Image (cartoon, rainbow over all chains, first blue to last red; front, side, top):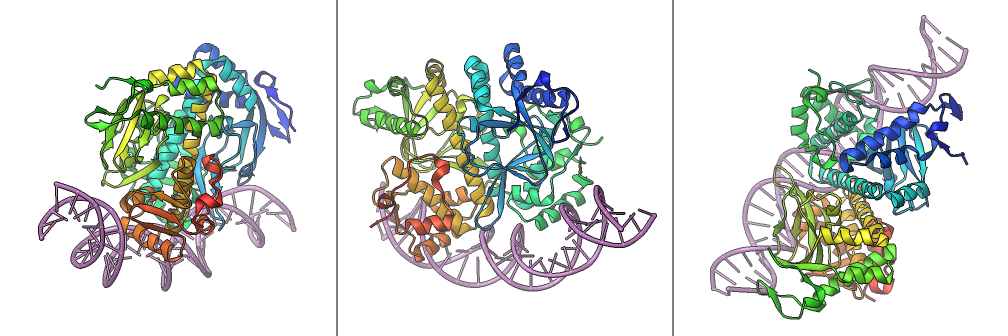
Length: 273
Length: 273
DNA sequence: CGCGCGTTTGAGGGCTTTCAAAGAGCGTGG
DNA sequence: CCACGCTCTTTGAAAGCCCTCAAACGCGCG
């Protein structure tokens, strides 16, 4: 068991298992989370500092590694500091369905606060560093700050809405539109944390993982990606996504970002000029 | 605008638009809701009576009628008193994806408390009566009773988990399994409100609506229904669903009811003996 | 009885899958 | 520096699940 450390104890340098864990990396993730929550719920200064003071346990996960098991009891939530993490379900025949994808600044399983039995284990899509926050601490904050309780509740609702949007995507759109929609969502969320710069962002997710998120096969994802590329909508090479035609991509995916409850992506940020 | 009435004002007889609205019908729905919430969150007596005292505005909706529009602002949540209601999204080509199905005792859009802009309009699958509860009143209860706030939050999380399970169903199972899974869920939820008696329950949902929930076409739903019938798993005629082989149906749908967070359906209730 | 709605059936087509194998990128080690 | 192995991407051909289009059927109801 790792010892808990607060942000101000996190000094630059090696912290555990030889992984580097700097102060900026830790508080940066929490700052991203707070900024996102703030756009949806507006916290006061008190609440923001309370969140920043949360004790966290850093944890590094290698790509493709699973975290937690179905039904298992957990007593902490996971904030993504670096890398990409998904929640997924596994079927009897071994096939997977990814139910959500998370980037830096996301708390992957805030819902576990209310239902501590894992419904969907976590999957590190890339090498990732997480910051585990004890449920007890989060509950303490929620009790002391009504605004935080409401904000957490609202975050859970937004997460649910996103899953619903994915259901629509998978249930009623063809493969090409599904992929376009996923890329649009990724772009908007990346933009919100400042990762999307003039239509470019790091996109380290494999086509197999995309397939598991969209209810498709990797082979077909590959072909659809080529279609979108041939249509001059996006370009994806070397783990970098470039959006060539934001409006076009949105149209193909019938993408309306309102369900994300994030600031609207400006066209300058959305695509290369 | 309709006037609000509290349960003890609801006397048997005609209330509005010629629809009959009896005391028992109203409080019965709230009792069902409380009972369900109680299995997931355990309320105290105080909180239960507070919920029962909520003022409601009854509203009747004809089958196939939509309620609300995408993006619209709402200031009340809808408790289902009678009939079946769904949430859905509509695509540009006119196709629909039903995102959740609700029965008596469900609050269809509790999430609207936290995000009052409608993400998925409501659809009356059958003729239905709803009880609208003002957000202001619900928030008042949540503020005064910490247990109710937590319970509502938890309900939202469960709703999200159910949608995630649907996403898995639609994304990674074939049509036959999808249908089996949906029927299983319907049976368990019906059992919880006492509507499933020895494997039989009222099932007034059309195959077109099932198709919209499963991401299929009505024609294919029909064929899959025949398949399940020919396998002696279920029988569906005259709007009545009969479960012939609960274990078999569960196996086909890979159904594990834990995501519903409801009491386990006993085998006696689940199927005809 | 005729109408509306929902279910059922048939045939053909298409989107996506499956299976298999080759190609590209990248870190490792000789 | 290149070979090697690994992962991920790409390509091809054939099969399959589900869709589309149409029309008939059954049933409740005015």
